[in-house]
Length: 437
Image (cartoon, rainbow, N blue to C red; front, side, top):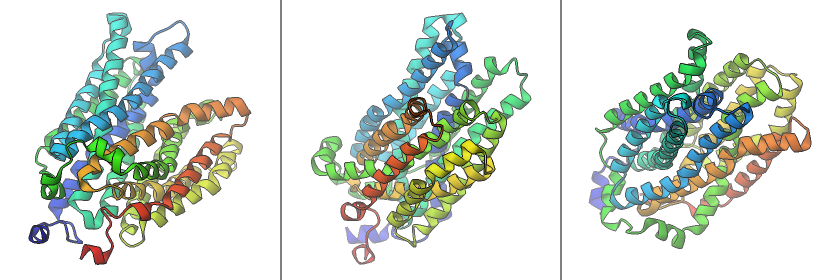
């Protein structure tokens, strides 16, 4: 065992050009995931009119958002099933085929006939494709995180930062596509073809990702531990690592809630509730997203020098303290919108750049994929998928436009509490120097 480990390239504190290629290819699926996440929301009204028409525009839009939510509900199930095969037979095949099927579903969504052409069958097909997309996404990003930390465990904070920087840039790509479509396409054609172009581009990007990923080899760490692979990883996880699952869900609460509010709720909140110019809102958010991606990279780099749990605590503390002033400033327009969203992106960079390595650190190799998938999908379904609905409900119930801040504050407190337990229950990736030696 000692000789095999020393022969492997993984103990190096540096990563080769080939290693960086592996990390970047592993990150492509995450970029596509957040691209699709934002694109569906950006074009929800157009999708509703084309595929879920109703005499009431509100009912039509609700049907589109219900389809959007269905993808989220399918993610935990997909994560459990796909991670089972990933922990039992290997990461590569699951990692490879999940992005292929997901991309095919995304491409199909762009080609779904309109309700006028197929009737209810068009609506049903869109729902089925969204469920399939969500099912595959449940294993895609957890698979990417598992793969990169097992490929380069000694610089796990940095490679996890790279993955989530790429994921965040997927949002910037989506908003750029939206702006381009609305700028260059005749306004009358945007509701007909705009959303289709966006989905087709996402699907083709995913197919390209599949082709490039075919050259990836199995995770070196899994290859070494293959003989010890669990036959029932989900059962083993719940039997031996229940506490780690709960700690992981708490740690992810702040990140998941912020992403749900910032990426999904914010555009509609700014334009519909606070009456900002929609194009200005999209531009400011795009600048904030790019800034956040840079902050995530910087946090990943710092994570090799400062314990990631401290960086996460700093991030959630900033979100806890400044959420309410942030929303008050948005409402009063007392601070430039772009500057506000840039500052929010910088603060979230500490959490988005550190939570992933803390999550992978909670689980041993034999059940890591399953543990990461369960925690990630449950947390993002609960705290991110529901954030826009809960935030909107809070505004309606309280009559206060700044009330979404309370949701962020509660999630930040939960993440801060979870961070106090990660060191005690971690140590499976970020081993202490003495143990690593």
